[in-house]
Amino acid sequence: MKYSEYIHKNHQFDDFKLTGDPVKDADRYVEFLKEPSWSDEYINIIRNTAMFRFSFGETFSVYTLTDGVVGRIMHTRIENAPKKLPVLMKNSFLIEARQDTLFDNMQSIGGLILNNEIYLIFTTDNGNLYSQTFSKIFDGIKISDINMMYNYNKNNDPPDTIYMKERKDILSFVLVFSLMMEAKRTPFVVESKSNKKHGGNKSKRKENKDWIERRVYIDRNIRYKNRKAGGLTLDKNGKYLKDTSVHGFLREQRCGKELSESEWIYIDDYDSTRWANKGDTRIIVDMHDK
Image (tube, rainbow, N blue to C red; front, side, top):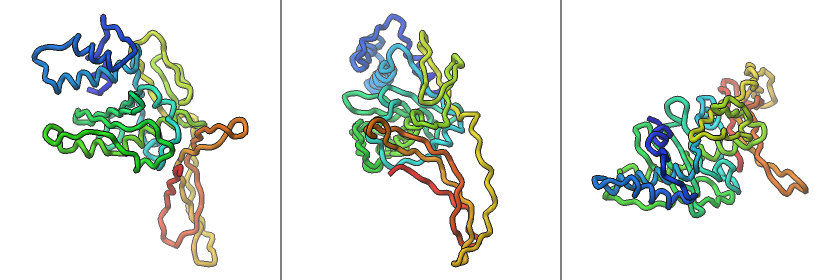
């Protein structure tokens, strides 16, 4: 069962009223449901999951990503965190793969903000639930330098807890997805259950639903160039002009009055050429924001 399905199945509101404070609501919810047989560990699981669910408000939504979208995200590298939080990450979110896993063993990745800290909640394909915590203030820091904040209990936590709490590829995936959702020229299209289609940076909620699924896929109108065979032009150093492929990347550029604002633009894959020694294979050039 996917994490979204588990949440939707086990955290129905019924007569429980939200106050707008997910922490207090989660505590109230535990007391509302609590049974004498529950262990402290199970109570914490219920509380944390309820807190995540309640942070969405009345309407719970999930982004389901097609294989093409996941591939494009993994194809787009990012080295530095943006200087301000992406729009999608300013509110609670949940990302899942339409089929199987997003990448590696990641099945679901969610996030919420509490007390100026970002909490990432993610599940693996074996059903385990983990979390990461870090400041929401990035200021352009290298992702590899971001400090994850956590407490580790060597007596109670599984051996892989530290590894899972320090993984930076999860944050990178979320950042790239978030930036591509708001970037100009994004190849992403979002389709809700109402079948109304719109660009990735213009997604709209469907009203009067407690469950919204937003399927994200690659724009059908995008056409990719055919790769040509390497050229045979020879330079004075005995090298051949060969075709290369530059992977898509995100670029932040100045805009607005007197260039006082900034916006993200997605640059799609494109063909280029380079001088190479005879027998060299095709070279993939990854570009990323520095």
